Image 1: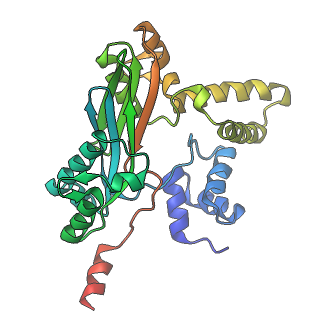
Image 2 (image 1 turned 60 degrees about the vertical axis):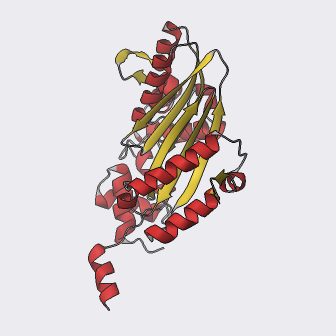
Length: 290
């Protein structure tokens, strides 16, 4: 497979590795980006804790709360310019409140919800026609809590990341702290038990290759793997992360100290896992002139 310069550039941006290392990794993995990332990690060239995905689509995420119900959603646009528009934010609010005040089970039901004389789908279609850019409701989740639980919500980077937590107890400040932690530190999982076995085994296999390539003695391998898996948890699991307000404790200890427990976490990062528009503006203008 031919390895293009853009593939090398993309891998370098994801891993921070050098150009030649990135090209070699892509050649060795026959152009498979995920395998190339693993190759660099196994060789100790990239320290990436996870397979980074290109963040592409623009838009905003937001959270709406009323009593024991909350709604979190992501609305996408093609450009960040449109996402900052007052009309886009108004549309986000209308859809968010429609979801909050109803109980859609899936995207089809959400798009059929009524907003005044229109449906959510009508509002999106009309906004797309008016703005001249594709608008889409990418995802949402309706969350409910009990009376002895509290919501915590936090928007990071003006709504590029929205984090919603449900925490036992009556201290909303604790719940907000945990939501802020999740938004700022971007964990992949809430608790250790949430880590899929497949993800854990994959991480162990990468670490095992690292240990072999580092020339460590086989009898020490298991101990080294155990230590690095501990580090993996500390980087990717919310409860195991060092608390950003007090690095001497982790989030799990912070909750325990305040007689609280993390019940649920929902975190949306705008454009997460989606392909980014990567157009050259000058070329676009020239193509329109022609």
